[in-house]
Image 1 (cartoon, helix red, strand yellow):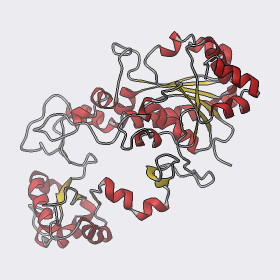
Image 2 (image 1 turned 120 degrees about the vertical axis):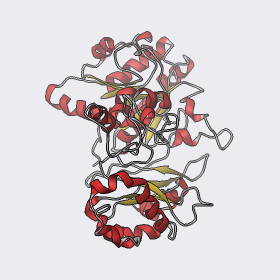
Image 3 (image 1 turned 90 degrees about the vertical axis):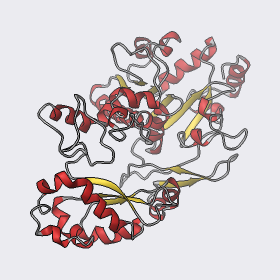
Image 4 (image 1 turned 180 degrees about the vertical axis):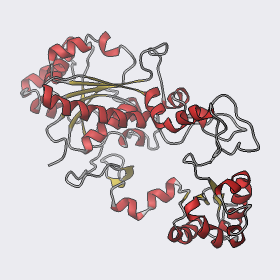
Length: 414
C-alpha cells in the first residue's frame, strides 16, 4: 500500500510550482486528476520543445503518475462536471492568478458548500499585503524573497540561483501543507484552506540570511569574505562561495579546470579537521605556527589559506580530492554537472534519477521522488497525454455511462 492511496486530488495547477506539489502526492499514491483546457492543456506541454509536436520535457518531468482530463470550465455543463469532481475529491490544488477561481464562481465559501471535507490548496506569489495581486514567476520570487540579494559575489550584481527555490520550493511547501491538513481532517472531519506564497517559501529557504541580518546589528559577520579587510553595509551582503555555517569554505579549482567548467570542488576548512587538511596540502608548519594554528589566527588570512589549498587541489581531479579528504573527515563536495548527475549509477539505483518511456517522445530521464519511505515505495509513471483519461475519469469517478459521456462531448464540456 502506498502512503496516500485512497486520496483523490483535483489538480488545477499548471507550469511548475503547482505541478511539483501534485506530482509529489501522486508519487506517494494519490489519484491525481489533472484538469486541462480542451485542445490546449497545460501551457508547458508546448514550451521549450526539443521535439516538434511532442509534449515538452518541461511538462513530462512535472506531471508523472497523473491522469489527464480535458474540461471546459467556462461552459455551464463543464461547470456542472467540475462541481461533481469537487464532490468526489479530497484535495483541490491550484496556482491560478489571484481571484481566478472566484471569477469562475467557485469561491472558497462555494467550494465548502459543495464539499465541506475538501482541502483547497493554493500557490500564490505574495501573501496578503501590497503585492498580493501581482503575478510571480521563479526569478521574481527569488528576488522578492531575499534569495537574489544574498547570492553572488560582493562586487557583483544580485544573482538568481539555478535551483528553482521559488517554484519547486513552494510546491514542496504546499505538499506538506496538504498532507498536514489531511491529517487534521482525520480528527475534525473538516477541510480547510492551505496557501503558500512563493515569497514566503523563498524566505523560508533563506532563513540563515535573515539570521545574519540580525547578527549584523551587533558587529561584522566574521565568516563572510568582507571580514576583516572589507566593509559591511546595512543589509546582509552577498558572500560569494563562503560557507554560511560559520566554518570557512570556498570553491577551488581542480585538475583540468582550464577546459572543464565544472572541475571544481567545495572545501570547508573545519577546525576539527584542520590538522589533516594542513598536512595533506603540505603545510604541516601551520600546525605549530601561532599565525595559523587557531581559527582566530587564520580568519584574516582566509584568502591566502584557500590559495594554498587550491595549489594542491589543482594537482588532482575533483574525485581524487574527494578520495583523499573524506577519510580525513574534511567536508568537501565536487561541483557536479547535470551530465555527471544524469550518468551517476548510485542516483539511478536509488530512483533519484529515473528513465521513463513515453509513447510519443520515447525514453527520457527525469528526477524521481527525492523522499524515500521504507513502507511506501514510489514508482514513476509517464506523464499523461492531453485528455488521455477523460472518459476513464468520467466513468470511474463520476459514474457516467457512455451516453452521458457522449452528451458531455456534444456539449463541448470536455
